[in-house]
Amino acid sequence: MLATLALFFQILLPATFASNVEISDDFTKEEKAFVERIRARAWDLILQESVERCTLRRRNKWLYSQVVLDLYLGFNNDGSFFSRNMSALRDASNKGTFPDMLIQGYYAKDYTWALGDLNLVQTFSTGPKGKFVIQLNRYHLDEGDVLGWASVVGHEMLHNMGHLHPRLEDDANAYNNDLEINAYQSCIKSEGSAPTNHFALTYRCGGRTR
Ligand SMILES: [Zn+2]
Image (cartoon, rainbow, N blue to C red; front, side):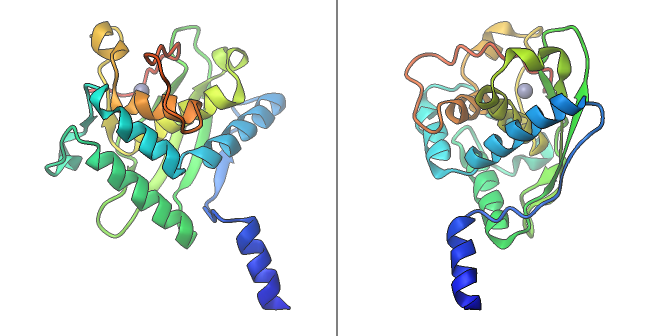
């Protein structure tokens, strides 16, 4: 009986994740409920192999794959750093050791939709260490749908794992051209089927940059 139950739950819950999620009180009660839907949708998608494949397939399109220098370790613009991130997280998810996540809210009437500090989660050495911490701009919450925001969460999670991009105000051309981090985001948004056109992201990240 127990074995049957265990099997049942294993089928029901193929991804264990098993980490603690905190959505801060910076959000109103209604916003919190929306953010939880975003979080759940993001976690449906972030580790799907189709999303990773979609991102890597677009390698000939993206120009930048930058990571903070002390994480660089010889990886290049070939998606290998990203792939290490994904396989480490997938592994952790299967073992139930997926890093915790804190989602905070802030309010700013500017173009940024979200922020994510760099290098909070290490996916090298013995497995993922650290905690995801991302901030969502409440000012823009009304403008996005759950799936679009889920893709933003994925983007910020890559920042947390050390990925960079030029700032919009520093280099709009580079920002708007394809970046690995944005490829991942648009592949989440298309649920793993490669977007056919240019990214055309309306989303603007104010996250940490080079
Ligand atoms: Zn960003």
